[in-house]
Structures are given as structure tokens and as C-alpha cells.
Image 1 (cartoon, rainbow, N blue to C red):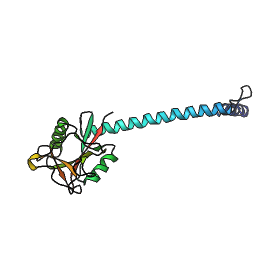
Image 2: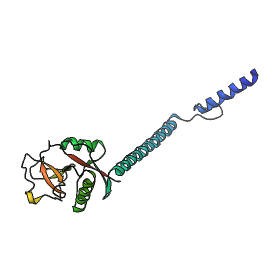
Image 3: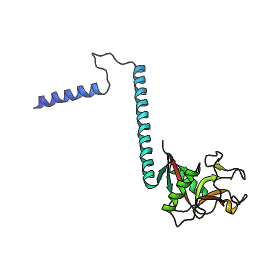
Image 4: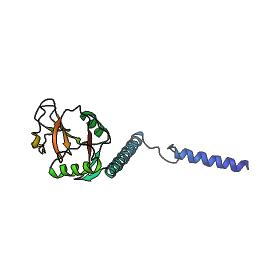
Length: 196
């Protein structure tokens, strides 16, 4: 019995020695430079796997957003549950991996209008990602890119705010047309997420 335990212990020691990367007497030792290269290759492969895992997590989170909101024009839109001022709304969208929604044409604007009518008909106005904060009358999106599409409520001569009203809201009362507003006003908002 003691001999079998001793034999088992010797086998375990032998396996551990070969498994720990220690060179056996019958094999040549791996040069340190080659071992360092192999370690670096292994680290590179592990980093790539982590990037893939993180990418899959982002895709899964995006799918969850799309299920709660709507999917249109290779984007997902999600309406906020609570009202915030423009800058807080923008920060909230960014923290969730998106931006405030930026309608780029009438089709996207109509999709957003229909979505908010179905989701929050009791609310009147919603922040979108367009401002003229930096230079009066020069509207840019939240990425500081110039805006080419506008859908102002011309019946009320929008935009009318001058330097005081610099943030843009989509209005359900005006059938999805826009107006400028004081950025400190509390409004619900629409976030958008690009679908890769």
C-alpha cells in the first residue's frame, strides 16, 4: 500500500514537473527569447479574444435597446423615461453608448415622430441632438458636424430664440416639426444607437 502511494506520488511529481514548463533531462531547454515570443503571441491571442467578447457584449446590449425601442434606418431609437435638460439628456445617451437622435432626412424625422406618438403621446416636446450653442444660427449635431436637414415649424417662425434658445426639440404638437428652446428646459429625449 505504501509502495503504491509512493509510486503515485512519483507519477504526480513527474507530471507536475513536465506540466510546469521545466525542461526534462532528455529535451533541450527552450531559449528564453523563443519562450518570450510564444508568451507574447499568447497574450495577443487572449487580447483578441477579449475584444471579441466585448464586441459581443456590445451587440447584445444594442439588441436589448432595439427590443425596448424601435429599429429604423440602421439605427435603434429609445425614448427616455424621464425629463432632463439638454446637456443631461446628451450625457445620458452617451453613457448608454449612443447619442441624442439626429434626424438626417424627412423619413427619419417621421419615424421618430411616429415612435414618440406611440410611446409618449402625453409628452409634447423631445430633445434631439442639434444645437447652435457654439455659434448663433449655425446648427450642428452632437458630434459637432453641420446639419443639412431641418424641419422647423415655420408657422411659428422657428427658430426664434436668438442666443437664449440654442437647443432643438421635436414637437408632437407641431406634427414632428422642430423649434429651438432654452437648453435648461426639462424634456424627455430620444437616444439613437448605430447598428454595426
